[in-house]
Length: 449
Ligand code: GUN
Ligand code: ZN
Image (cartoon, rainbow, N blue to C red; front, side):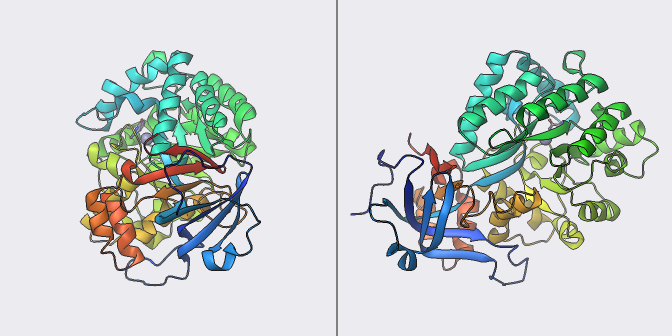
């Protein structure tokens, strides 16, 4: 009898455990639109994933690995499930959890009306801890095991987030928002305090267990030139920390930036000027870039976080996949909750596909799964650690259920290829399709509790 996947008797972390399932991961970027190369996609229809402690020990065909399993190794039978690396969401705001689905006629009024008053509540460490706990539960319910997370201007909001993440041994990247102008007084730091607090938080959290720090100037309009300068100095001093901000999201924002920084060739050029374009710098949205900007992204190794549910919800615009691909700049997928309307990376793929479609571009499912796993890990300089099922990687993975709903079951039963299976999961799936989520070898979510 196969083990019941909903059984509470799964082994504890530290043990060697094997999972028999369909397995999917990538060793490089799969074929782009119209290109059927499959050599970088590893799909094992009857695979075995062997996890030891917090890491993946072995991966391969069940037939070739099963006979060599150490006697007594428990084998969990998930042959009707698909295991992929845990999803990586490259742009999300945990303080906006309680204001998701708040409508406004565009980005700037949405920030004024909902975002800033909500972020004010993070003055209170108890509130911050409560939201951090719920937010992380929600990520895990959706199969997201790593994310680049904006906190608020309050250093305590960062402590609350990392405390919760560290307790569950998750690989997370987060940072304190830096913001010293064009925002309410109650959310303002200064160039000096923003820099000092960020450095203190780097020292406290960067590399502490699986936690990583991101310098987080909110966006150019809310940072003075002095603050961007401080940020650039910190980026120079701490080369392996991340940088995250927003760029070219909305036309009113772009116009405002032009008025605030008249001397710059483009919005992106402001960040370039302060040394903020580099590997591990992640730029949310990237809708209204031009060819020169995209080239600079590619040359510097800076990464685009495409946020389709947010861009549609706020009416910001359509990300230009064809232009991004032509420039070879790294592109990842992100929810941008609470501007984004879903925590689910499957739903994010669904909307990414439609946004691409509207510009005449076919974004296939294999590429979207790549962008949400191995592609993101590579873009973030975390290749080999997360985003993969390869031996030696951190054991962060998601167990997807192609029969999660009657419609998914009916559609996936008729899938003739991996692409059709993945496409159905992306179009029809959401948190219901996540049977379980594992981080560092431990089960951190199981559907149904
Ligand atoms: N630009 C500056 N701040 C924000 C934010 O919180 N969300 C989004 N979507 N865009 C921003
Ligand atoms: Zn955002």
